[in-house]
Length: 327
Image (cartoon, rainbow, N blue to C red; front, top):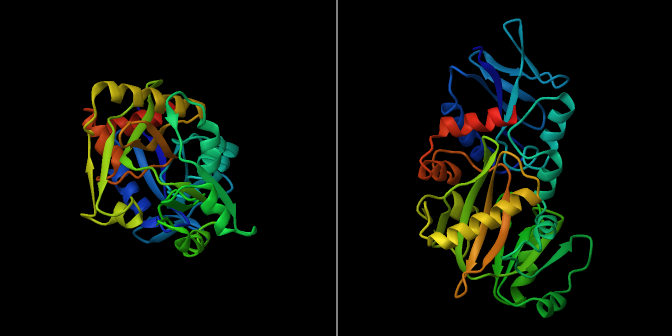
Protein backbone atom coordinates (compact mmCIF):
# COMPACT_ATOMS: atom_id res chain seq x y z
CA UNK A 1 0.00 0.00 0.00
CA UNK A 2 1.49 3.34 -1.00
CA UNK A 3 1.21 6.08 1.58
CA UNK A 4 -1.00 9.05 0.64
CA UNK A 5 0.41 12.58 0.56
CA UNK A 6 -1.50 14.70 3.07
CA UNK A 7 -1.22 18.48 3.21
CA UNK A 8 -1.99 19.57 6.77
CA UNK A 9 -2.94 23.25 6.52
CA UNK A 10 -2.41 25.42 9.59
CA UNK A 11 -1.94 29.10 10.47
CA UNK A 12 -4.34 31.51 8.82
CA UNK A 13 -4.91 35.25 9.11
CA UNK A 14 -6.42 35.59 12.60
CA UNK A 15 -5.47 35.81 16.27
CA UNK A 16 -6.01 32.05 16.47
CA UNK A 17 -2.83 31.36 14.45
CA UNK A 18 -1.05 29.74 17.42
CA UNK A 19 -4.08 27.64 18.35
CA UNK A 20 -4.12 26.34 14.77
CA UNK A 21 -0.41 25.46 14.94
CA UNK A 22 -1.07 23.41 18.12
CA UNK A 23 -3.99 21.66 16.42
CA UNK A 24 -1.76 20.73 13.48
CA UNK A 25 0.97 19.35 15.76
CA UNK A 26 -1.49 17.04 17.48
CA UNK A 27 -3.09 15.88 14.21
CA UNK A 28 0.36 15.18 12.69
CA UNK A 29 1.33 13.10 15.74
CA UNK A 30 -1.87 11.08 15.37
CA UNK A 31 -1.78 10.31 11.65
CA UNK A 32 -0.53 6.80 10.90
CA UNK A 33 2.91 7.20 9.25
CA UNK A 34 2.49 3.96 7.31
CA UNK A 35 -0.69 5.24 5.64
CA UNK A 36 0.04 8.95 5.35
CA UNK A 37 3.00 11.18 4.48
CA UNK A 38 2.12 14.41 6.25
CA UNK A 39 3.39 17.83 5.16
CA UNK A 40 2.40 20.72 7.43
CA UNK A 41 1.73 23.74 5.21
CA UNK A 42 1.64 27.13 6.93
CA UNK A 43 -0.91 29.48 5.41
CA UNK A 44 -0.08 33.18 5.63
CA UNK A 45 -1.32 36.25 3.78
CA UNK A 46 1.81 36.53 1.65
CA UNK A 47 2.65 32.89 0.98
CA UNK A 48 1.96 29.31 1.90
CA UNK A 49 5.02 27.29 2.73
CA UNK A 50 6.47 24.03 4.02
CA UNK A 51 9.25 24.44 6.59
CA UNK A 52 12.35 22.34 5.83
CA UNK A 53 15.66 22.17 7.69
CA UNK A 54 17.07 24.42 4.97
CA UNK A 55 14.27 27.00 5.30
CA UNK A 56 10.74 27.55 3.99
CA UNK A 57 9.70 26.17 0.58
CA UNK A 58 6.71 27.89 -1.02
CA UNK A 59 3.67 26.04 -2.35
CA UNK A 60 2.88 26.54 -6.03
CA UNK A 61 -0.71 27.81 -5.71
CA UNK A 62 -1.45 27.10 -9.40
CA UNK A 63 -1.84 23.39 -8.66
CA UNK A 64 -1.15 23.27 -4.90
CA UNK A 65 2.10 21.38 -5.31
CA UNK A 66 5.39 21.41 -3.45
CA UNK A 67 8.82 20.87 -5.00
CA UNK A 68 11.42 19.39 -2.64
CA UNK A 69 14.97 18.53 -3.82
CA UNK A 70 13.83 18.74 -7.45
CA UNK A 71 10.92 16.36 -6.86
CA UNK A 72 7.35 17.64 -7.36
CA UNK A 73 4.88 16.49 -4.70
CA UNK A 74 1.14 16.51 -5.48
CA UNK A 75 -1.31 16.03 -2.65
CA UNK A 76 -4.03 13.37 -2.38
CA UNK A 77 -5.81 15.18 0.42
CA UNK A 78 -5.95 18.51 2.29
CA UNK A 79 -6.50 18.33 6.05
CA UNK A 80 -7.60 21.87 6.96
CA UNK A 81 -7.08 22.93 10.57
CA UNK A 82 -6.97 26.71 10.05
CA UNK A 83 -9.27 28.42 12.59
CA UNK A 84 -10.98 31.54 11.26
CA UNK A 85 -10.19 32.86 7.77
CA UNK A 86 -9.31 31.40 5.24
CA UNK A 87 -9.80 27.84 6.55
CA UNK A 88 -13.11 28.11 8.37
CA UNK A 89 -15.02 30.51 6.11
CA UNK A 90 -15.03 28.54 2.85
CA UNK A 91 -12.15 30.25 1.03
CA UNK A 92 -9.71 27.32 1.11
CA UNK A 93 -12.58 24.92 0.46
CA UNK A 94 -13.52 26.78 -2.73
CA UNK A 95 -9.89 26.73 -3.86
CA UNK A 96 -9.57 22.96 -3.30
CA UNK A 97 -12.92 22.38 -5.02
CA UNK A 98 -11.57 24.12 -8.12
CA UNK A 99 -8.43 21.97 -8.04
CA UNK A 100 -10.38 18.78 -7.34
CA UNK A 101 -8.46 18.03 -4.13
CA UNK A 102 -10.62 16.40 -1.40
CA UNK A 103 -10.56 17.84 2.15
CA UNK A 104 -11.84 17.05 5.66
CA UNK A 105 -14.23 19.92 6.39
CA UNK A 106 -17.67 21.17 5.37
CA UNK A 107 -17.89 22.48 1.81
CA UNK A 108 -17.39 26.13 0.82
CA UNK A 109 -21.07 27.09 1.16
CA UNK A 110 -21.61 25.55 4.59
CA UNK A 111 -18.27 26.88 5.87
CA UNK A 112 -19.15 30.41 4.75
CA UNK A 113 -22.67 30.28 6.18
CA UNK A 114 -21.68 28.86 9.57
CA UNK A 115 -19.08 31.61 10.07
CA UNK A 116 -22.06 33.98 10.09
CA UNK A 117 -23.89 33.41 13.37
CA UNK A 118 -27.10 35.16 12.22
CA UNK A 119 -27.36 33.15 8.97
CA UNK A 120 -26.71 29.91 10.83
CA UNK A 121 -29.47 30.66 13.32
CA UNK A 122 -31.89 31.44 10.48
CA UNK A 123 -31.21 28.03 8.92
CA UNK A 124 -31.52 25.90 12.06
CA UNK A 125 -34.61 27.77 13.28
CA UNK A 126 -37.59 25.45 13.60
CA UNK A 127 -35.69 22.27 14.47
CA UNK A 128 -37.80 20.39 17.00
CA UNK A 129 -36.81 21.24 20.63
CA UNK A 130 -34.08 23.68 19.52
CA UNK A 131 -34.45 27.17 21.02
CA UNK A 132 -32.59 30.40 20.35
CA UNK A 133 -31.85 33.54 22.29
CA UNK A 134 -33.70 36.62 21.01
CA UNK A 135 -31.22 38.79 19.11
CA UNK A 136 -30.63 41.78 16.84
CA UNK A 137 -28.04 42.07 14.10
CA UNK A 138 -26.38 45.45 13.65
CA UNK A 139 -24.29 46.74 10.76
CA UNK A 140 -21.45 49.16 11.37
CA UNK A 141 -22.59 51.60 8.67
CA UNK A 142 -26.02 52.05 10.30
CA UNK A 143 -26.83 54.18 13.30
CA UNK A 144 -27.11 52.22 16.56
CA UNK A 145 -29.79 53.59 18.78
CA UNK A 146 -29.06 52.28 22.27
CA UNK A 147 -32.65 53.07 23.32
CA UNK A 148 -34.07 50.85 20.54
CA UNK A 149 -31.76 47.96 21.51
CA UNK A 150 -32.68 48.37 25.18
CA UNK A 151 -36.41 48.41 24.33
CA UNK A 152 -36.27 45.33 22.05
CA UNK A 153 -34.24 42.95 24.21
CA UNK A 154 -34.03 42.03 27.90
CA UNK A 155 -30.77 42.63 29.81
CA UNK A 156 -28.24 41.18 30.44
CA UNK A 157 -27.12 41.13 26.81
CA UNK A 158 -24.29 39.45 24.97
CA UNK A 159 -22.56 41.53 22.31
CA UNK A 160 -20.42 39.57 19.84
CA UNK A 161 -18.96 39.90 16.35
CA UNK A 162 -21.26 38.11 13.91
CA UNK A 163 -18.37 36.52 12.02
CA UNK A 164 -15.30 35.01 13.55
CA UNK A 165 -15.05 31.59 15.05
CA UNK A 166 -13.14 32.83 18.05
CA UNK A 167 -14.31 34.53 21.22
CA UNK A 168 -12.47 37.82 20.60
CA UNK A 169 -14.55 41.02 20.88
CA UNK A 170 -17.30 39.58 23.07
CA UNK A 171 -18.88 41.43 26.02
CA UNK A 172 -21.67 40.90 28.50
CA UNK A 173 -23.64 44.03 29.33
CA UNK A 174 -25.98 44.53 32.31
CA UNK A 175 -27.64 47.82 31.25
CA UNK A 176 -27.91 50.40 28.46
CA UNK A 177 -24.93 52.39 29.78
CA UNK A 178 -22.56 49.54 28.90
CA UNK A 179 -23.76 49.19 25.30
CA UNK A 180 -21.67 51.85 23.47
CA UNK A 181 -18.31 50.46 24.66
CA UNK A 182 -19.34 46.87 24.04
CA UNK A 183 -20.52 47.70 20.49
CA UNK A 184 -17.26 49.51 19.77
CA UNK A 185 -15.25 46.50 20.95
CA UNK A 186 -17.26 44.11 18.76
CA UNK A 187 -17.14 46.41 15.71
CA UNK A 188 -13.34 46.37 16.02
CA UNK A 189 -13.54 42.69 15.02
CA UNK A 190 -16.31 42.77 12.42
CA UNK A 191 -18.65 45.12 10.55
CA UNK A 192 -21.67 43.09 11.70
CA UNK A 193 -22.47 42.56 15.35
CA UNK A 194 -24.98 40.34 17.12
CA UNK A 195 -26.72 41.60 20.26
CA UNK A 196 -28.41 38.73 22.01
CA UNK A 197 -30.27 38.07 25.24
CA UNK A 198 -28.15 36.24 27.80
CA UNK A 199 -29.28 32.66 28.41
CA UNK A 200 -28.52 31.52 31.94
CA UNK A 201 -27.75 27.83 32.18
CA UNK A 202 -25.14 25.11 31.85
CA UNK A 203 -22.86 25.42 28.83
CA UNK A 204 -21.92 22.43 26.68
CA UNK A 205 -20.05 21.59 23.52
CA UNK A 206 -20.49 18.43 21.48
CA UNK A 207 -18.65 16.97 18.52
CA UNK A 208 -20.49 15.46 15.56
CA UNK A 209 -18.71 13.61 12.76
CA UNK A 210 -19.59 11.36 9.86
CA UNK A 211 -17.65 8.14 10.45
CA UNK A 212 -17.92 5.14 8.11
CA UNK A 213 -20.82 6.93 6.41
CA UNK A 214 -22.81 7.29 9.63
CA UNK A 215 -23.38 10.48 11.63
CA UNK A 216 -21.76 9.90 15.03
CA UNK A 217 -22.46 12.12 18.04
CA UNK A 218 -19.56 12.18 20.51
CA UNK A 219 -20.01 12.48 24.30
CA UNK A 220 -20.73 16.09 25.33
CA UNK A 221 -18.35 18.29 27.34
CA UNK A 222 -19.66 20.64 30.03
CA UNK A 223 -17.75 23.90 30.33
CA UNK A 224 -17.70 25.44 33.78
CA UNK A 225 -15.94 28.79 33.81
CA UNK A 226 -15.05 31.15 36.64
CA UNK A 227 -15.41 34.02 34.16
CA UNK A 228 -18.81 35.53 33.34
CA UNK A 229 -18.74 33.70 30.01
CA UNK A 230 -16.49 31.45 27.92
CA UNK A 231 -14.39 34.15 26.20
CA UNK A 232 -10.93 33.94 24.62
CA UNK A 233 -9.19 34.12 28.02
CA UNK A 234 -11.47 31.46 29.51
CA UNK A 235 -10.86 29.26 26.49
CA UNK A 236 -7.08 29.48 26.36
CA UNK A 237 -5.85 30.36 29.87
CA UNK A 238 -5.09 27.40 32.11
CA UNK A 239 -7.25 27.14 35.21
CA UNK A 240 -9.93 29.64 34.20
CA UNK A 241 -12.36 27.00 32.94
CA UNK A 242 -13.08 23.42 33.87
CA UNK A 243 -14.11 21.00 31.14
CA UNK A 244 -15.94 17.83 32.11
CA UNK A 245 -16.01 15.07 29.48
CA UNK A 246 -18.27 13.15 29.34
CA UNK A 247 -20.72 15.68 30.79
CA UNK A 248 -22.96 14.67 33.66
CA UNK A 249 -26.27 14.30 31.80
CA UNK A 250 -29.09 11.77 32.15
CA UNK A 251 -29.28 9.22 29.32
CA UNK A 252 -32.64 10.54 28.10
CA UNK A 253 -31.27 14.10 27.88
CA UNK A 254 -28.15 12.90 26.02
CA UNK A 255 -30.37 11.08 23.52
CA UNK A 256 -32.52 14.20 22.97
CA UNK A 257 -29.39 16.34 22.46
CA UNK A 258 -27.99 13.79 19.99
CA UNK A 259 -31.21 14.02 17.94
CA UNK A 260 -31.10 17.83 17.88
CA UNK A 261 -27.42 18.11 16.89
CA UNK A 262 -27.80 15.40 14.23
CA UNK A 263 -30.63 17.46 12.71
CA UNK A 264 -28.41 20.61 12.83
CA UNK A 265 -25.61 18.68 11.06
CA UNK A 266 -28.01 17.48 8.34
CA UNK A 267 -29.79 20.77 7.86
CA UNK A 268 -26.54 22.72 7.44
CA UNK A 269 -25.18 19.99 5.12
CA UNK A 270 -22.10 19.54 7.34
CA UNK A 271 -19.24 17.25 6.39
CA UNK A 272 -16.41 15.77 8.45
CA UNK A 273 -16.29 16.86 12.09
CA UNK A 274 -17.98 19.90 13.59
CA UNK A 275 -18.54 21.07 17.15
CA UNK A 276 -21.88 22.44 18.28
CA UNK A 277 -22.07 24.70 21.34
CA UNK A 278 -25.28 25.04 23.33
CA UNK A 279 -26.75 25.95 26.69
CA UNK A 280 -29.32 24.02 28.74
CA UNK A 281 -31.53 26.69 30.27
CA UNK A 282 -31.65 26.80 34.08
CA UNK A 283 -34.90 25.39 35.42
CA UNK A 284 -36.23 23.85 32.20
CA UNK A 285 -33.14 22.24 30.63
CA UNK A 286 -34.32 23.44 27.21
CA UNK A 287 -31.67 23.30 24.47
CA UNK A 288 -30.49 26.76 23.39
CA UNK A 289 -28.29 26.83 20.28
CA UNK A 290 -25.13 28.99 20.40
CA UNK A 291 -23.11 28.17 17.28
CA UNK A 292 -21.49 25.53 15.15
CA UNK A 293 -17.72 25.42 14.70
CA UNK A 294 -16.58 23.75 11.46
CA UNK A 295 -12.83 23.58 12.18
CA UNK A 296 -12.80 22.86 15.91
CA UNK A 297 -9.50 22.96 17.83
CA UNK A 298 -7.48 19.73 17.78
CA UNK A 299 -4.68 20.30 20.29
CA UNK A 300 -4.25 17.37 22.72
CA UNK A 301 -6.38 19.16 25.35
CA UNK A 302 -9.08 20.41 22.91
CA UNK A 303 -12.70 19.35 23.28
CA UNK A 304 -12.99 17.00 20.28
CA UNK A 305 -9.90 14.93 21.20
CA UNK A 306 -11.29 14.71 24.78
CA UNK A 307 -14.64 13.52 23.41
CA UNK A 308 -13.06 10.99 21.02
CA UNK A 309 -11.18 9.46 23.97
CA UNK A 310 -14.36 9.49 26.12
CA UNK A 311 -16.18 7.60 23.34
CA UNK A 312 -13.55 4.85 23.60
CA UNK A 313 -12.04 5.66 20.19
CA UNK A 314 -8.45 6.56 19.52
CA UNK A 315 -7.41 9.70 17.63
CA UNK A 316 -5.39 7.98 14.87
CA UNK A 317 -8.47 5.94 13.88
CA UNK A 318 -10.72 8.99 14.15
CA UNK A 319 -8.54 11.19 11.91
CA UNK A 320 -7.95 8.32 9.48
CA UNK A 321 -11.72 7.83 9.21
CA UNK A 322 -12.21 11.54 8.41
CA UNK A 323 -9.66 11.24 5.60
CA UNK A 324 -10.91 7.95 4.17
CA UNK A 325 -14.53 9.06 4.42
CA UNK A 326 -13.82 12.19 2.39
CA UNK A 327 -11.70 10.33 -0.17
